[in-house]
Image 1 (cartoon, rainbow, N blue to C red):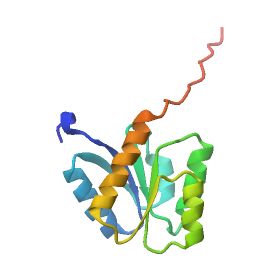
Image 2 (cartoon, rainbow, N blue to C red; image 1 turned 90 degrees about the vertical axis):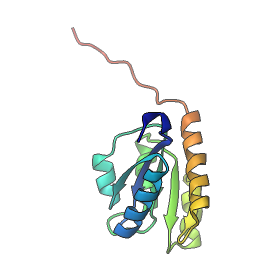
Image 3 (tube, rainbow, N blue to C red; image 1 turned 90 degrees about the horizontal axis):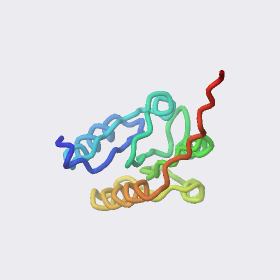
Image 4 (cartoon, rainbow, N blue to C red; image 1 turned 45 degrees about the vertical axis):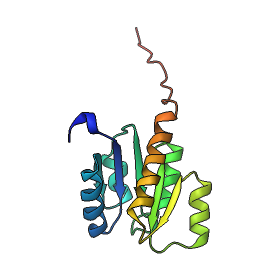
Length: 141
């Protein structure tokens, strides 16, 4: 990918390998950089904050739900916009995710057009947010 064509970074967190493969291929072909994780714990352990970025997040996974990850990210000050992609969510889960700040919730199977629109909205939101305030380092004498 040519850096001039770079559109943004996508963290894809889903325990379904076929979803990860197909979305990763499609999104990479559209000039997004894509990093896949098969569970939220791997994401927490191995991801580095990149901007502009969005998180595509499945709701139901074996180790941790999407909203549990969303709460952890919020507590740690990570404000990357979240788009849920789910095939088995209850209305209460969708409402909770949106109340916690998700920017969209797409039910599988979703259209690529609706996914691309959600991604662009998320990347634009990420570009507009203020960078995190860093506390000054104190140097001991």
